[in-house]
Image (cartoon, rainbow, N blue to C red; front, side, top):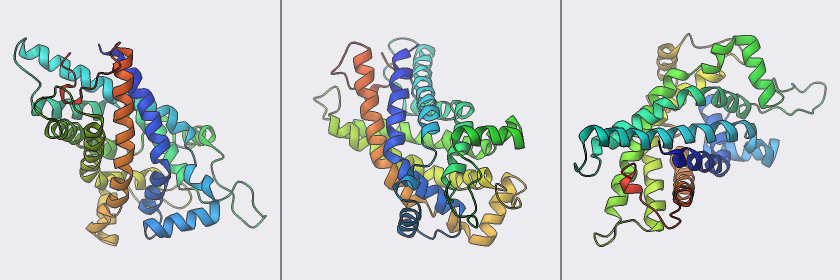
Length: 303
């Protein structure tokens, strides 16, 4: 197994959270609360009411959980490619685009069991617009922090409550990661001269940004449904009976276009986040293997 990929993927994922968390908070609020009508309006309203802290609510828990999920994603992806290479036999050449696509899909689905609990805690904390300290007539936030939120969900909804929204997460991350790794690998090949065996850092960063945007293009509709199911009923009566009912009601009341309302901010966030994640991942992986100058994204899993 490629242990280095699990370790470097973990650290790279944590760095990615820190870079993209403010925009992720804005995205979640737009998806789940009608009082926020757009990126700029949500950003201004959040800052004026809650300050800079409002953009980083609940970040400590995702730093831990997303570092684990990134570890699972990169580790599973490379090891799946390795298994497919061994199944084809030695001397069959590099992995095919289909193998890259399938390995990415397996990696995306594999990390759901680790990701769900942290993701629902993150989403619910991001949607809290109340202050912990306020006057007697100002409603207090339901959750006092990540640990309190986690324990409250277990107490009120059971352990299964931590996996609310798991189905849309699977339908989001399976195709998203499949397209992400396929786009990243293809883009690196296009951006690398035939005379070079490995891409330049600029190619890695650009390919990572493009791949992130491609992944979110197919993942945004399910991301909307996931977020709505996760926060449904936290302060008012539940609106949705389940996954399909949420899709029907969202389409009926707000139109099909709402499923892509947060696509712009997802792409805006994905470009810098995935640039950071992939560069840090490549640097650490090369270092842990004793090859500090090694960068080989087009050849994921072949060594």
